[in-house]
Amino acid sequence: MKTAFFYKSIAFALVFIIYFTEVNAQEETPILKPKVPFKDRFFTGGTIGLQFGTVTYLDVSPKLGYRVTKDFSAGIGATYIYINDKRYKGYENKSNIYGGRVFGEYRIWENLLAYSEYEILNLEVQDDFFPYLPTRKNISSLLAGGGYSQAIGGNSSAVILVLWNLLDSKYSIYQNPIIRIGFNIGL
Image 1: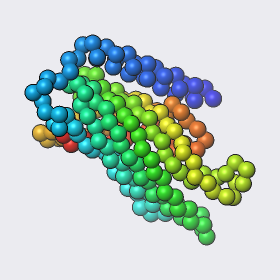
Image 2 (image 1 turned 90 degrees about the vertical axis):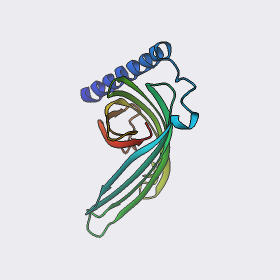
Image 3 (image 1 turned 60 degrees about the horizontal axis):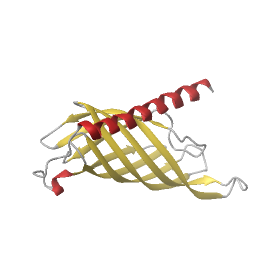
Image 4 (image 1 turned 45 degrees about the vertical axis):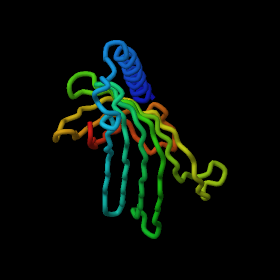
């Protein structure tokens, strides 16, 4: 119980810091000058996760973002996850999870960034009244944390994020902390 309170306290502090950093950024960071074309402010990227064996896991999560200022970006993304769990003899559990998200990231200093995301995933869960009858449910997650971005080319970067789910529920697919490794192209 103390561990859950500790993680929630850390997550609340991160969201608080991100919120006020963005408020300050609006005052201090000028909007990009008109000489940068509208289309050049867009970037794409995402994450891919693979695992094969007794438990097969495939995660494809593309994203599309827009550079609002030099340091602040926002965007949308999609997620598709396929799981095939064959750990129990005579029983195979296959599941498709899909959904979308909106995100914001703020470059705090050089390669360090603050990140927040609201995500809704549709997944198969056990029904509360009929436990042997699976049903699909939309599960919300509010992820907050920070990360490191490293340039890997002229306009590409690799990103590692450490996030916490602030809306943890019994159906959540995440276990805190969440570590993501991904890439951006055009940023």
